Image 1 (cartoon, rainbow over the protein chains, first blue to last red):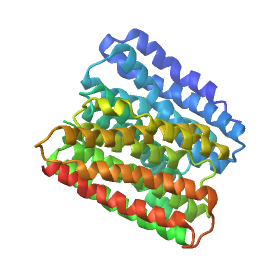
Image 2: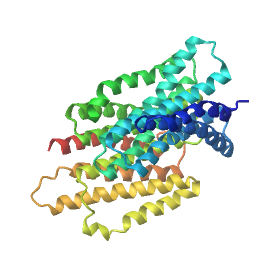
Image 3: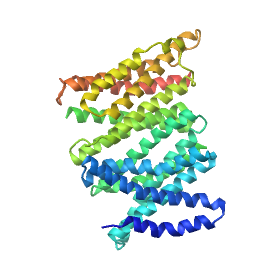
Image 4: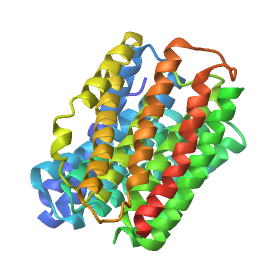
Length: 207
Length: 209
């Protein structure tokens, strides 16, 4: 049995204190990291609930339900920030990436508490695979939103489409890493290749 | 066998077209190309997810949330291309009286709902309705603006054909089953694949003019 809410309290408490004490400039990134962790916790509950309602087994849930729930939940803190505070264009990418970092960090902590930290090589692959995948999905959405910034209607429609791409990317990653051998290796290097692609072309295109 | 082959051809074509559109979008920085690349990419990802599921688990996805979300998103990006090409022009006056489009799409949605998937059918009906309205709107605008070059004529026609082909496929699948060429579903699906490929040419014509 994994007490992820206990882990959450332990990790979130110092962050919460830091958010209260820190200057307003540094508060936003920390709030998004905390938001990402909170969304990870809630995703876990919601995925379990949806899987139980639909009668899905563990494999089906991880391939078909988890990507959908996690990507939607990961976007929620940013959508709330956008709709309520209407921030400038420059905050978009940072906010989304901080949420993804919080999400991936909390997911990795939960994984470590369940499976231990003995296997360095596997954890290295997991860190650069699953961790990078969460970040790259949000980076992709962020760059897309920046590109579609000028017209509200295009921005809204585009965000829904970009979210669908992020969900499918996550789903395909989960299918590949659930295999062994070459498909799993392709899955693990997929986020890194996408990172390189976005680093070379995405940033330049979004400007 | 036929289904796998047809899906494979469609996926490869969508992937190649996505690659071409992405290169064009990066080199020209034209937004129409960017939307087109997203249209192809979402279509390709939906097909890829479906194909990987069949390859590794020897069955179609149990809930199909993710592929359907992709295909609906591809309609959304197609609509964005039309909206952008028409420069956000409002719906033409004669079209406002054209009730037959929403009546048709929602009647078909109600028909498909006897097989379940209420939410998916409703969203698809809305998307198909908006796509067809935009396509006919484009044709009306070009007809009204006499003397102008009919640059998006082919695109509007192809989008209408795309919608009709989708409806033909969905309707036929209610009455025919079987993994042979005798099933008309595969012929319509092949027609859809051809139209998907032709959309690249139509958008290139729009951008170049």
